[in-house]
Amino acid sequence: MPLLALGLNHQTAPIALREKVAFAPEALPEALACLRALPGVHEAALLSTCNRTEVYARIEPAAEPTLTHWLAEHHALEVAELDAYLYCHADAEAVRHLFRVACGLDSLVLGEPQILGQVKEAWQAARSAHALQTPLDRLFQHGFAIAKRVRTDTRIGAHPVSVAYAAVRLAQQVFARLDQASVLLVGAGETIELAARHLLDAKVRRLLVANRTLEHAQQLAHRFGGVALPLADLDRHLAEADIVICATASREPVLSRAAVARAIGARRHAPMFLLDLAVPRDIEAAVATLEDVYLYTVDDLEQVIGESRRSRQQAAGEAQTLIDLQVGQFMDWWRGSARQDTLIALRARGQVLRDEQLARAREQLAAGRDPSLVLEQLAHGLTNKLLHAPSASLRRAAQSGDVQLLNAAARLFGESDAAGSDAADTPDDPEPPAQT
Image (cartoon, rainbow, N blue to C red; front, side, top):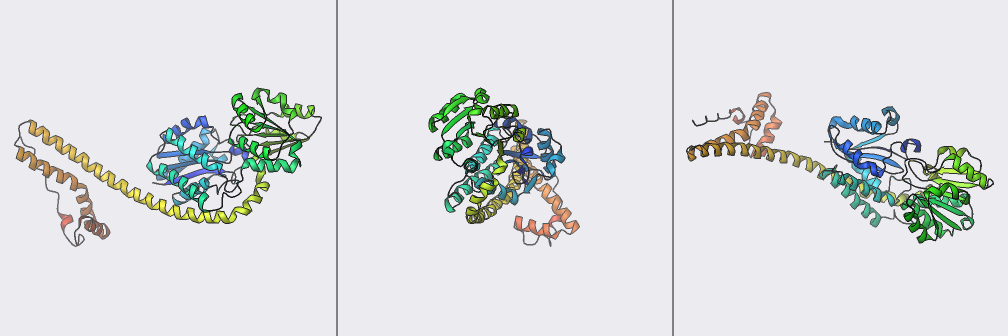
């Protein structure tokens, strides 16, 4: 049963498409329920960040197109709009991909640590939605373990770099002295908090924090010596900011072109630097058409991030070696698990047959039948039921000359030469008639 990783990321798709297929955290339970209910899908998880949307699933072999069609339909898109940007990894490559993602090797910022937390959130959401079974659940937990080992055994985490750090570095390239700049942060999540820490290190002159939940803005502003604003007052204070960094979970833009136009007018066209780290985007794309406004998105951080990536390439190679070893170990377990499924099914079938024959025996005993005859019929009937299917298969193998199956049966049942014996030609003993 194939294991698939299907999705798109910052390497394959532009932000305009990524924001269309992003899943809001509050939408995950319903989306997972719909995904899990698809024909041929046995278990699934959804990972959605600013840089990627991915479906991890264990499916029936013919169900792969179902995932693509579901992803398109769920976001009201045509399949053709996604096809050119999607990647699909199966089995060992799917395992390798998840391990790389969890370790930060597939991130825009090589080795960035935030992605591991996001993968854990995706795993927890799938667990809470009862969308995981043992194989996929174990895959994620294996991924967490290897990510921890990569952090410990390599220098991939040395000189940590995040999207927030890259954003502040880009701001420093535009504004040579941040100690003379006023910065407005919109949002109060991890990315904004990291940006606030780097801005504090850069000794920014003034820090404003706006968030839909004022209490969260106040907590963040208090920690970093800033001023908290309700999101409703954002337009009124926008002109005070030389730099605006946005990273909210809003499904709609929080900054419109009209609002920024009013702010730049109030500033008498003093330049404004706006950096949108959200997917879907927080700032209307049309803002980029305004004069004296410099709008960047997360995709524009590549140049800044390239400097740190070069210093981490050796560590990334070491991490990849560890991942390759772990992929082999997981696939050994996966193949063994598939064999266990056959054994479990065989034992379950035997227990069903046992229960059926035992129920018949109890009915006959209750009817006053001779116990010794009932026991004889129970043993005879159970033996015939258990051996009927393998006997029929061996008979067909003997007739068709399937020596491989006959020899496998010989090893299984401890016979020396099934292919050369006439055991497969022995018909099932007829079941004795029920006593009357």
